[in-house]
Image (tube, rainbow, N blue to C red; front, side, top):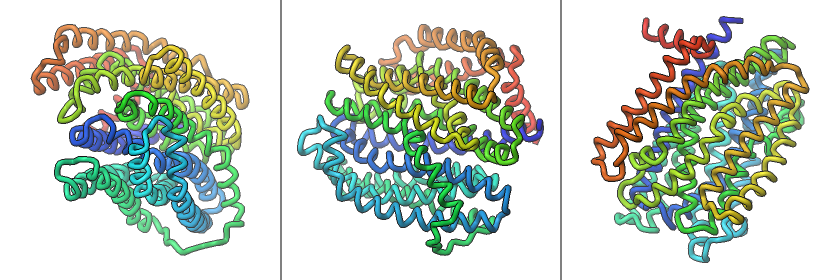
Length: 528
């Protein structure tokens, strides 16, 4: 058992590093686009246009399809061997290609109506630009859905690094292709250049798929069209996907609801909300997604083998590790949001006022960061034990709660984009709390005392981290708005490094098990 847990931590580290690379490139992508186009009307249109295929990706590909496929594929390998699993993969690849090609065509046709519902506050010209960009980007959903299927096959065979790096190639393709084609269309980067960004998105999606193909061939997969979709494995995946569409896509549905409200606010609100969400997702992607990616195949195999003790241990450890790694990020973002956004985005056409608005949203998003990370571990566990309807019902409630809170905080109290972000954070906390309670009630597989004990042990390290951030704000970053950029970067990174080191040291002194695992992993790497 101890060996498996150590291997889990190592694999999570590999995925975390790969995802960190992707998230950093994603930040570079948005930094470049913000500097070239600013944070106003043009990027609002591009942001909504990109969210249309992106929503489908998160719901069908990296959400429902990925979770359902990995669970079934891993069980198939365990019970029947590789050949049977590859046959199932060929059937699912064929079905995915056919179905999502149809979805792409239908989506392109319905785009004007979808934009009218999704961004009711856009005027006619802004809506027309959004429709044009969205239609160009719709093939992205097909490409990344196939990429997610390939990622699932590789993850189930314990290959994590290459699939996690694939999204980095999406960012590289969209940066180089988008900026290059945009400059060719309009060297001044006016509205016409946005077409280049849309084409670059499709180029990036293609790279995300094709970079994984060599690794897939290496482990023995060969694609042949297979239209025998009545296979029991295919039916099982589709049964899992039905409830998972809403469960795994609830976060993105809530983001789209936020977009509807933000479209009625000032120009730039959608883009500012988007970059705040992107920064909140940086630690979420590095830690939450990494831990969830590594633990899901293990949970599925443990459930298939009816190894209750291993399932319980892996699940509880994953939740505690997610909290350990994301609670410090929550505190750091709360205190350092504005300096961080200033360093990253306040260049070119992106000004100080836009920075302040985005920072307010980031601080509000941060309150739900740990809950999001824990859901990346907890929600897929329900599918591994065939309790797939539970996350679905919780997601229904989360969507309704988000609508209510958005109305209260944005319309009733007038908090603007801060209110939209705060409601999202509150929904994440509520969602995790309900899932945790239901997992504990239905399976008796969680020990709350261990979780509470870990949280209590984290209080002192978190207070130490907060103290360093406050001191950095008071002495090093007091006049950050007028600082030279190099001094601002040095002061910010100095504060973050000292705060992180102090947190890690205090956590090690408190003898937190997950921190000891991470320290041991680092020591092994250094000895090599």
